[in-house]
Length: 403
Image (cartoon, rainbow, N blue to C red; front, side):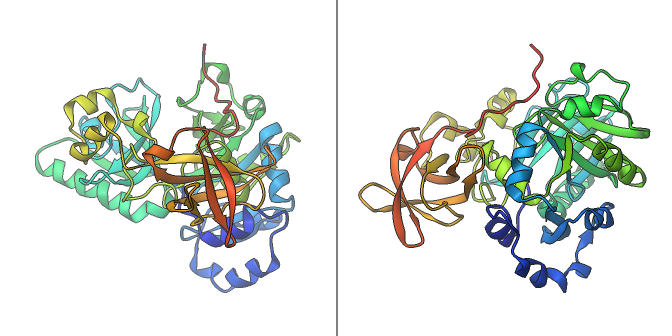
C-alpha cells in the first residue's frame, strides 16, 4: 500500500546486502524524518534506516533481504508499520460519511468485519487504497497510507465538516497507536500464546480488541500485505516495545523491513500506491473491480462512478497485469513492447522473486495484450528480453478463511 522511495526499491528490495552508500546518503536527513515509537528499538536490533514516505524506517536488519523474505514465507516476521495513518470515524452517520468518499459497500460490513476499499476522485482516479473495519465499539476503524496522510486527512476532514454543516452526526479522530504486522504461516500460533481469544475464530479481514502479551486495548486484525496468514496489531504506543520484545522471544519470529515487505507484496500481486495505482488509474484499469460494492455499482453513488461503472461493461484501454521473465530483473519504468517491437506499456513494480527464482513485475498494457500467456518483450538495460503475461498472485496466498 505505501508510496516507496525509489532508492529503496532499487537498492534494498533486490539486493542480498544493503549498499553502505545508502546509509551515507540519508544520514544527514534522518533528523528531519518522523520516527515511530520503535525507532531506537530498530537501531538496537541492527535496523538499517531509510527515508520512506517522510518517515525513518528499517529497510532490513542484520539478515539479508532474501533471508527475511523466505523466513516470512516459512515462519513469521514482525514489521513496524506504525507510519500508516489510523483514524476513527464516529457518529451515527459514519457509514454515510465513508460511503461518500469510497467505492465499497461499508453498510454491509458485519460487526468487526473489514474490507479493502479505494478513495476515488470524480474522474474515477484512485486517490488511495485503505482498509475500513466496522468496529463493534461503534466506529469505523480506517488504515490508509503514510504517503497519502495529508491528502487523506484533508479529504476526510472536509467531508466531515460538510456533513456536520448539514446536521449529520459524524466526527473524525486520529489514532496515535503504533501498528505492528506479524506475518507468516506460524503467526497465529505465535500470537495465540499471548492472547485469551481463540484466534481460530478470527478469519481473514476480521478484527477484535484484546489484551496481547499483557498490553491491553490492542486491536488485532487478520490481514496483511504479504499474501500470508497474519495480523496487524494496533497497539498503544506506550506498550509497543514490550509487545515487540515479547513476540521476538519466540524463535519463529524475526524482524523484517521494507525490502522484504515490498518483494513479499509483489509476489502476492498486491498494489503499491504511487507506483501500481494512482490518481490517473481507475479501479477497473488497476484490476481492482472487485472493490466496487454491487449496491454501489447499481446506485452509481460514489465519486467517479460515471467514469468507472461504464468501464465494467466495456473494454478499458489498459489493464494492470502480472509479468514474469528470466534474465535481467524488470524494474519500474522498464518499457513493455509488443513482439513487433512497438512500445505498448510500462513496468510499475518489479524484482527477482526469492520464492520462484524468476523475475516478477506488474505493469500496464493495452487490453488486447492483457490475456495470461501472452508473450511480450521488455526492455532492460537497453536490451530486449521475452516476458509472459502471468496471473497474479505469482505465489499462492495463504489467507485464513473459515470453511
